Image (tube, rainbow, N blue to C red):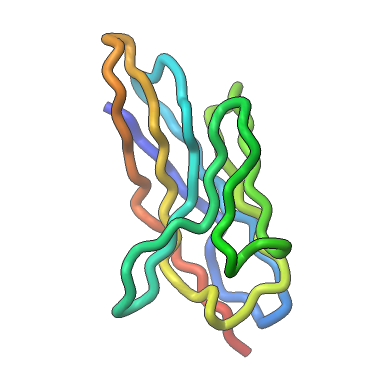
Length: 120
């Protein structure tokens, strides 16, 4: 079993900043891709940012220049630094990882989601 524990969401004013964290634990041999998705009410879940091992990060156009994704492989943790927040960033943010377990199986896992609300 793999668990993803997210933290850092909350209520912030427009123009403010929040930092999300997602820590993975469980039977993981290696993690290839770590990413963040979000889903606003009535909308499809969308990719916000992802980072693969040894590759440059990939961002949604709507967050480029404002959000920064990073990862700490030793801690099996991925972060999302969100600056210059806008009301349209309001959503439930999910962490997702693609990993390999000790049996060599390629799997993925989702976090439970953390709410980000941007409002004055």
